[in-house]
Each structure stands twice: as structure tokens, then as C-alpha cells.
Length: 262
Image 1 (cartoon, helix red, strand yellow):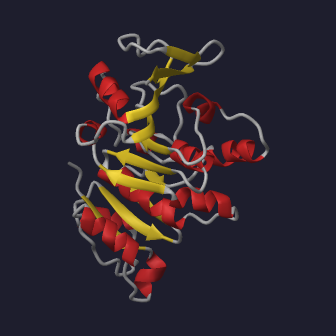
Image 2 (image 1 turned 90 degrees about the vertical axis):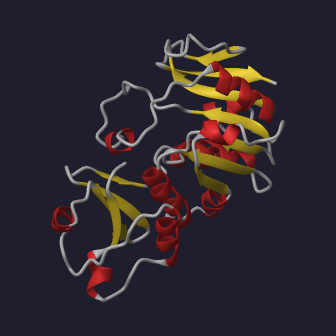
């Protein structure tokens, strides 16, 4: 368990302002202590309080600062151009494989930065919803905050982010609590043990990720709570131990989607 605390931006701290209500709520939910900024720098706070990392509430975002200098913050990333594809009436691979329909209820078992959840929520429309699970408390806090605060000029994307309900829970624990046919679609995007691309942007996310292998038992459990299908994004050749009804993609790409039909 990492030693972490939360504080305000230097500007807010300078004026004696504390964390916003949302940031306080998330910190209280996960029992992350709050410390005064007192116009001190982040390296000083990390050392003075003997912290592994520090959550800092900046404008519109929470930034996780690690003692080695790495940072993690929410950004919709590739969700933006993928949603533009959908707006332009073009096909988008994930929503095509999931077969997202208007009004669908979707369970994303591996939220991360919620890029896939945002695209799925957009495709499901105003009557749809996404429940997004995240086992890492720090990743959950950053993403849950970002989904409510990220500034976007697109009201349709803003509404899509509002249709995502993030939960801080391991998908294995969550799945066994659900009744049969609870969701239309269930989705997994497990973290690859070896990244396809060496990206400094994803490195801080990877250090908090769950690398436990996806099992056939979890897949079958997911199939019982799905009404239509279960989809798993994976690196080609990494999930040969799992039995899928179909594999989509992978011919000219290092990524593919395994599909279980209900």
C-alpha cells in the first residue's frame, strides 16, 4: 500500500482555500489524508511527510505526483477522435465489436482513464449508461474526478462522461455480486504485462495497474451477467488459454478483441 496524501494547488493554498467538495468526498471515501499546502513545493511536501506520492487538486483535474517525478492525471485521450468518428457516421472498432445499441447498459471491468468507457457511453446514447470498475484507488480518484470536471466544448461528450458511474472495486469481487443478465454488454481491457509502445504517458498508470491474469472463470461469470456479449481487448497471442467464440482484428494489428456470445 502506497503512502499518499492530498493537498490543494499552490494558488488555492496561498489564499487559504481548501480542496473542493468533490475532491474531499473522494479522499474521504478512500481514506486519503489531506495536508495543508502552506505555500510549500511538492518535493518539500513529499519529503516532509514521507510520502510515496501526493494528489494535488489543480484547475479541472487531480494530479498525482510520485516522489520520483512521474505524474498521472486524467485526460480523455483517444476518446476524442474516436467520438468524432462516431459523430461523422464512421465506424469505430470497439463499439462495432461490442455492438453497442442505443440505451445499452455496459459494464467496463477495467476503467483506467475511462477512454473506452467514454466512447461506449457516447455510443449508447442518452438512454444508456456505463458502470466502470477500477481496482486501484489512486487511479479511481483521478478518473472519477476527471469525468466530472474535464472541460470540453462538446456537450454530447460531457453528457457521455456524466453517464459513467465509476466504482472503486476489483471486477472479480463485483462480478460475483451481480444477478444474471444485469448488463447488456461486459468489457475487459486488462493491462498488458509488456507495453506495446514505450510511452512515458502511460508509465504512471502502469505502476498502479492490476496485472492479475484474466481467467476463464471470470469470463464465464461475466457471460452470465451479460445479456448479449462479453468482449476482451488483448494483445495478439496473449490469451490463448481463454476460449472465445470469435476473435476480431489482429491480422494487421498487435491488438485483437475476443468475443463471447450469450
